[in-house]
Picture 1 (cartoon, rainbow, N blue to C red):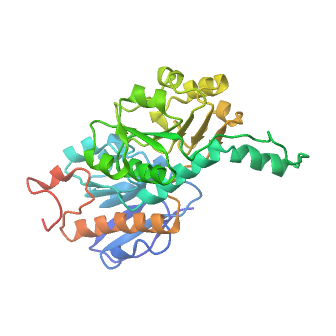
Picture 2 (cartoon, one colour; picture 1 turned 90 degrees about the vertical axis):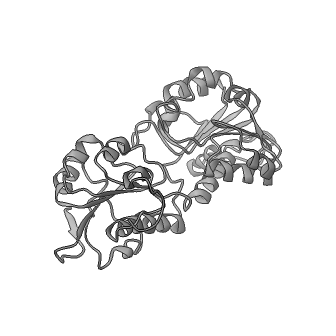
Length: 341
């Protein structure tokens, strides 16, 4: 299906949106821009993006859209890029900055929804809910049994959070409510977080060896790609669980398959994958892993707020403002932050 132009008044910014977004979250752009929204089945193909973008002044894209140097070079009119997501590793921010193009993301509004999902994965993985649900759906005969789908306790367990950003912090708060022993690792200690949650700042190796449950909550960067590989997995505590709701390439999936087959970690819960939307076939064949299709922020409120934040950033750019959710504010010059240009 072709892209659908929403409005057609000339003399305004033209904004390309790579996927239909929930509700009326683009309404901030009413009267300010002409929108072209891709309503095809699935993501906008790269060749279509490169064909349509040169005629547009701004782009609202998804984390699944690769906006690299080639794409940016194809669009001489491009003045702003808004990413529908808090992570922006899909965008070549460095090159956009060279071209003077601000890049926006959607922080804060998805924090609690994603932390909820991470904790849901912890519960589902620890208590083997995926296995048990599939067992019932298959119609396997059963009676109540003392050893049927024995799982692991979450209450009072040791939770290790890798990455104490906003989502990691929100997860630690949830862990505190479950009476958990809390560990975290980050680039540095966070005394305010420790006062709030009682979490202990430790090294990554220490966290892996002491935690019953490990949650990955770091952004994808050069230094975090395959942060968790064969060595790290083998150093995890016996009977431990690994959950990843950050970015797929933070975890070496091939190494994870080997580790899960060995039983260390004993189970895993994944919402993200190295080569999304492709899931490693070997993972699909394992019962001791819970697999979700990248739905960490998938609530009505969170996704609506993300769309409004992305559209609001483009609207602010049109009005000559400096939106607060700019990931490369240096493009605006010495005076950073919000306010008129």
